[in-house]
Image (tube, rainbow, N blue to C red; front, side, top):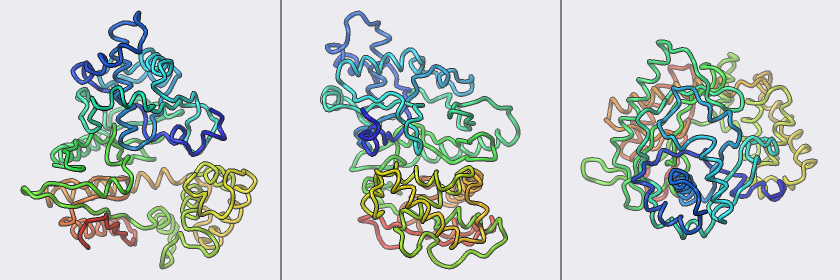
Length: 426
């Protein structure tokens, strides 16, 4: 598929990395249903590998409508021992061959080397999306919320190097302490009686993923399909059982978090109001540009232009044709200049690549918020980076906790309460 046709499609907008971890018992019926469309001479183990890959692709499609991304190069599969989950099928040989078998059978749409968020054409990851034929063939056999059986040895403190490969690191008191903290979170998340449309859903383990060093990144990501991949509408249907009663849920978010961190670090007072509101520009364009500028290395304008070009959700509201790179560059120049004027006190932070450093701080804050809520209620909020979902009954306590944590970090932050449809006012 040509890149210009791929941008904005479910293929390019792959939601999650490919995650396996399925047991033989979870795959046998799928193997049986796939046998008629697979070559007769492939091994039994390869049949199970095809079934494992198919199961993950179908689960992603059912949950998000999108595909999964994965590597076809060998290097990403040469993981240090600490990251091996015990699934022998998650190897270069089995994953790439399984994808090829599914593609040749017409069971997936496939694009080789097209996925790299914000950097189209880098060719670092490939994407697979379930076709209608695959959904009809094995979809009825799959519960997208079924817990994977092979996560007993999952490393929850992950360090990513170049090319987003997981790299080894020296164990320290700090990494041991972080792992113990994440274990507390995972135990609490596993104990939640969470439901979606009347079905119990199991929250997969969360991991803290750092970028380049333990001073950067560290946000919490579920390993596998989860509430983090859901649309806002799907999250609105989540309920949690407390003392035998189902409770609707509400999401609470920090406003302007990274801008506030930049002002605080610069020793400047942050202006009142919404920092993403600038006259003459759509708020979504400004928000995307600000976050891109904080994460950019030097050339912020080009980075913003690329980000605008790659975001199909902004095409309706931006006022320009974002498929046109010249128009994107012109809009980027205008919005970058407007942001630098409005936020002159933190101008030096734009293009400084400070975003991942701020993520380390907001992920530490998230850990403190979750730990406090577990201590107070016995229930862990569902983390979505710098926002949290809780039962409406826990919302006021969550707001107070988030406020106390941010104050301890020297931040003056407003909270945004996203009232999920059907939830009570908070």
